[in-house]
Length: 526
Image (cartoon, rainbow, N blue to C red; front, side):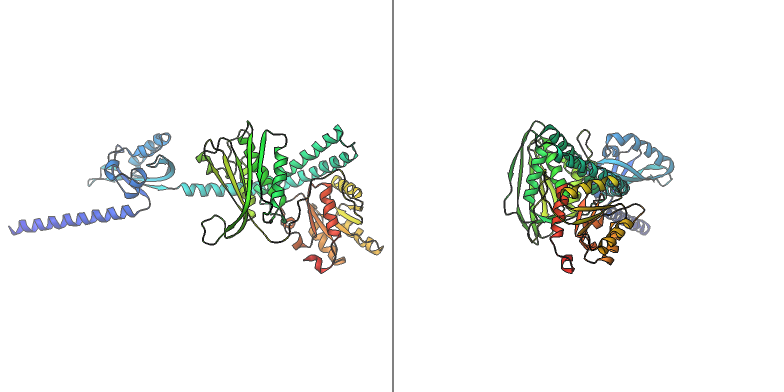
């Protein structure tokens, strides 16, 4: 009897130890962040962790037991999964397999699966134990890194192409503008030349958009009234279209400090997007207001003052699956689209410390909300587009540019504006002309310097040498590299103004009149 009692106690102790071990195993498996399933050799689930139930069937372990593990894999990947299970049966383990898996709500995600054979006491296979890790976010980050690498390479290429193309556009814009001034006002020839000029300026926007998206495009900022810029962009984009605009922009919108060309890209892209959403015509609503984001308020923007502009169309709307991706580079649903438009909007606003969001419901159109930080200080008016005549000035201007045709255009521009121009093609000629003019008592009133001269002295180095001769030299930097940091922070490098190629006659005229009206000396640097 004593032996029977001892055997029973030992059996009870062994059972208790087994239950404790099973409970410890269950707690350990349920605590894992990965989903764990146990299945028989046919793939039927015999056990599952808490994370597996949450993913595949939150209603309970009982409803999950007995189901095929392959039901959790999207149909297109099941044949590959069966083949890999056969590999696990032969080799005992497989690791790092990627499948598209189904959640309980029917949505899919990318899962990384590792599996091993479960062996009996005699070594025969009984089934499989598998762990599944959701790697959707990891895959997204890997894709972002790959995208960044591609964009860096694209940016280097784009910079060189944009510079050369902008020099070509400078010649086209300049000569078309000059020829238009010689044509009879109101004539068909004048209209054709105006169309050439406008088309070339649109080409400038394309190069700026590519640079901003691919490489950065540091903003060249100034204070302006956003309402005026939005209205002018709206009128330009919708000219001749079937879209009617309804604009409600208060006159008391706060000033913003922005890169005018980049903000034109933002609203040009948003307006074009809305126009394409209403191919049969319709109403485009543009509204705005001043908004204060207070500390503690749930907002994607830091606390501060913002100007909000909303662009609403009445098109078909954006499906939920697309809304999450519309700001991703190269994502497009439009035939022939590049997928750069809304990506550029996002990139520009991020570099201005602003933000963009979208609201949409299928069949009820879409509304894009843009927030841009407000600033203090007087507004600098947005210059009007070039007219046939430009205000005349006077003075001597020294120009350096390595492109002969660009030099010719700038020389004609300056002559039309009333200035005496001397043209040089490199830094050595520039310095020689500058010194000689001072010796003769006829110094130049301003210099215009091309930022990049291949194989020679560029604008920044040229200005350093000019300031050794005359610390008060009035210098303007010009380049087709609109994304160069010197262009964005031109004052920090000693320049008084900036001209992004291609530029119009009135841009040059307005800039020179402003610079020549300011005093020389240290006060002018501030």
